[in-house]
Image (cartoon, rainbow, N blue to C red; front, side):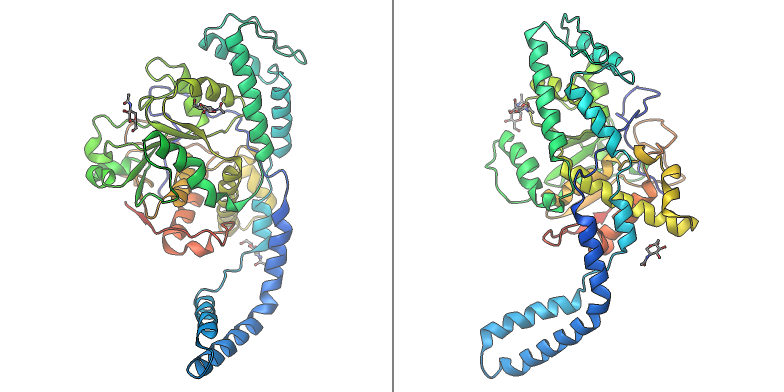
Length: 428
Ligand SMILES: *[C@@H]1O[C@H](CO)[C@@H](O)[C@H](O)[C@H]1NC(C)=O
Ligand SMILES: *[C@@H]1O[C@H](CO)[C@@H](O)[C@H](O)[C@H]1NC(C)=O
Ligand SMILES: *[C@@H]1O[C@H](CO)[C@@H](O)[C@H](O)[C@H]1NC(C)=O
């Protein structure tokens, strides 16, 4: 079965492992009740509703020719759309469980500790020390439990203030709000357009290629096809030199998770911007301390270095968890509660590839997906010799999601009705 490979930075960093993924779920849980309500309403109401619609259509076609043309015509159009595409009925229990974030409490505590300047717990001290060394500041911060870090250097102090501000804003915004998909153009595309000297408009990209890092890319010569898209989104700093025939050479957006930036920030020759400081980067934050890397790197980036909106993160997390739960229950016949032990519970996370595809849905008129999937004959990554998967992802669940995206996007849960999913093609 195919797997999406990624979450590696495509360089020589053996034994890299995402440790301690923090994931913040919705702080408020406004929708569970709503969905339950909608679902429970739907069943008894639908047959009656269907009959009503038929009557309306019938009445409309009858009276259209005689009198009130315009008013009824719009009713007729609307009702036809409704009849052809019934709103899918989602399984309320699945929606409810998908909305639960097992890491919520722990993450909140950790954020609070960081905001209080307490880096002392859970080996965070070491991270902080190495970070200070990395920015070459002569700081003798003590960070034992409860004692705030008191940096001496003004430079350090500036980073520290930025860190606190950014983390605070981010944590505050984290909640479920599916309409966030409608804001991606403003949040992501506008700043990138501006950097590229274009007038920021609400126009989407006419076409986008999302390029995963699977070894299946080596089977074909998609390079030219990939580059022919208006925008090309690449994942986790995968190398392109010497693979141009296979993966193309254009990079419009480098999409990474914060582990990648964290590693890159410290490595000679990578230093925050592996594709060059002029390539726009979009990053989701999987661990709150990575905002340290973010604020430091942000100063050296010429092109935008954008952190995904936490509401977008929550949306992606819920969708993937829904598919993961569904698969788990169908395949094992076990109970909802057993899911966590199989999927790393609070560590469970969507992959970078999944969120990059979601981003493309928001900013592109057409989306082509390359290099997602696995075959027994193909290498795991086109550019590394990595063998194993990371267990905190459920790639099979993500494939089920992509399948629906291509074939029947309306059955994907949690996506706002106001959002129109663009056509998606998957290249194998
Ligand atoms: C919801 O889905 C689960 C798992 O597929 C299933 O066990 C359960 O019966 C479903 N509930 C309803 C109301 O369809
Ligand atoms: C960076 O990119 C912008 C927009 O694409 C371009 O105008 C500028 O010349 C580039 N700068 C460098 C140093 O390549
Ligand atoms: C990152 O850098 C850009 C450009 O210098 C700046 O406009 C933006 O405010 C910075 N972001 C944060 C969160 O400091």
